[in-house]
Image (cartoon, rainbow, N blue to C red; front, side):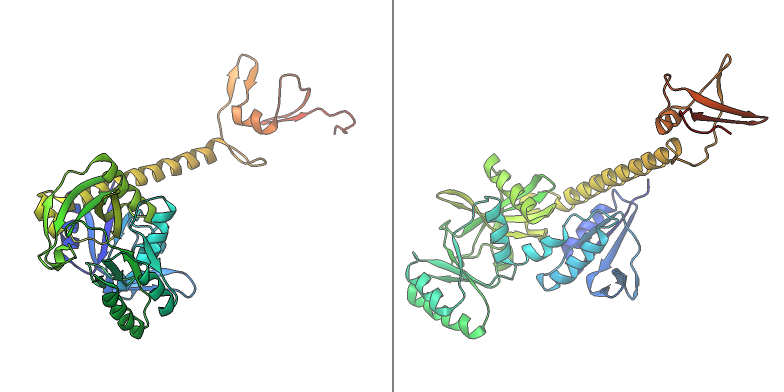
Length: 364
């Protein structure tokens, strides 16, 4: 079986690693730049690559910045009609919006820090007045720790509120979980955590992200934390996902889910070839789905062959048993003949017809 896969991305190093790893398992792997993709919305929905319809693949792994969330969702929605997509279409909307992520994880009972969203500055001030400091204030969209602000007091938070109000952007107010400037990143592939690292922020920095200067080291997660990470990925609809977790006094809490995670930091920290873990999973999952579709198609074909529609002619061999002719099972099933029925047999040279005998029916 020849499997064809495509990785649609912005050409990051992580994407290049994944493509290289995929080629160890799949013969045809196309590297497609997201910026060369268009989606037609009038008439037939279609994906265009450099102005021409994108060919069909067995697996389409689409990933990229939150700025392309709408396009990525459309690509995955169309591609999922005939290919395996590891990131469900809705996940691009959910994972790229911290508020929607909060809603979805809360629905699934996954622990997260207490978070507030307000409609007006006045309502926000009332919440800030009742918060225990320090706190976190952040925009719903953004990755790699961007758009995350730390306020250690009400005056500080109030000043940030004035600035955020001027920007006319929604923002979240979240309790601060003291972890000494560290967090955990777990990479979920399928239903397993394939790698995890503990990130430590630089001195004076609250964000532990590698892109913000944080340092990573390998960590072995307990079963509870692994389970939370896997459930979080499943909740947003991603078979491949990075889940960021804080170790709070009440236990692990999820702060973010990233469906386009960088692989350099965690690969370097854990010495685990995460790209290969992803590639191997994509190959096995795609092969499994392709074989399942092939078996289903074969079953449907055999069903059409062995169970013809009523009234249609069929070509078969006679099963002669002495002076008897045995009818195929599907014939007796469709005609509902039984041994108790009386039948009228009409015979001509080279022709035989059988009908149930019904009282009152004229016999010609």
